[in-house]
Length: 512
Image 1 (cartoon, rainbow, N blue to C red):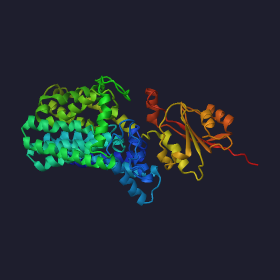
Image 2 (image 1 turned 30 degrees about the vertical axis):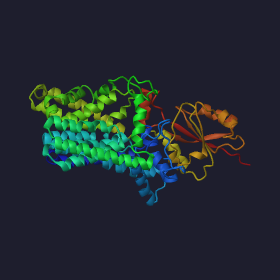
Image 3 (image 1 turned 45 degrees about the vertical axis):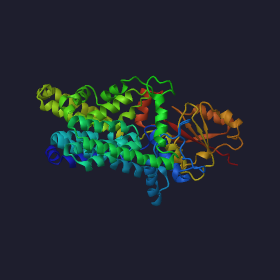
């Protein structure tokens, strides 16, 4: 088996990558964070049902108060196009459509695997290309991220190929490859503006490493053209040339460390991403893997990738808002750089070459932890307890009114899975109680809602008693269970990670 893999490394890598992603398409349902549903899928789903623009011509996207919509519409248009395809095939339920969505994203995620493999085979040897390709294909969280609507991951699908093509352009003096690198880099930038931080490194590294002024200028001009194209799209969508970018920069000036502005979503010290990178690559293996990328030969021969990675991480480190997913765009770059670093570390005949037992132990420990992560994430139905009640309601014949009770703590609800019927519901929050909803006339005891969905970390017995007092008799008809990862994350950090458990209650009508 090992001999067959070594003889056909790319076929083996792609087979493993595709099989893992098929499993993720089937089992890794749901959304990981707020942004990979509410700023992506939900927006596109609204566009499909109600159109892209309001009657006054403004974009149907809530945006940020005072600054407006911070994103390009390019990725959401891509999602809308997928929805139109499945609608033409007769698919009306979002949960069914999402299988198609995940499959398309799984195919996109093969791009960095292919380019990473070819880069490593060209710059190192076949063994290193096999190792790096397997890391890109089967690192613990990669199949899970591959099928999500995270703009960070989708931009990564284009960013690594862009950097690889830039390296090939520099070495071959190829203007055509420089243009293609700029196009792919521009797409990565349109999807996630921060990807532009990594692209800044390309012309600088071309000049420093090989004095390739011509290719550096061509690449830079290509990026300018792609940015101008984004600006033209923004005239149509945002009503202003480069409107999304200007909104974004206006908002994120407030997030620079030390700048008194809005409280960051998740604040953190400047070194958080350094610790994160070392943690996700599994210490103590990560100390060797990450440390190797700063070797002399990596700096001399692979400056485009290295400088792109350093600039991206450094700039994010000085921004006060630090969320783990922000580092995803350059994570495939790190996997390639680390593979290169270990290649040189081994070839130079130092301790990494001589101490075979230690080398085997480090890789064995990494493989063990990685396998555990791979199983946990690939089969993880994220926010299952938030989504399944919506699907349950969507399959009922008569749903004349729903009360969503999130009074235990604030929660975003994925109404899109309820076939986009948010106006037919009332939502209770920590700031809006059942009594207040009754006083406002939104909930009528004489005509109680047929269904109540309770989001509670545990059985909703105390809620049922309250509903019995105010509205009438209700019984549990469906339990939205949390996924295993939801359960684990809730135990690790209940402040930021809800259990995502839910209960659907149905009103019991009195029979004469």
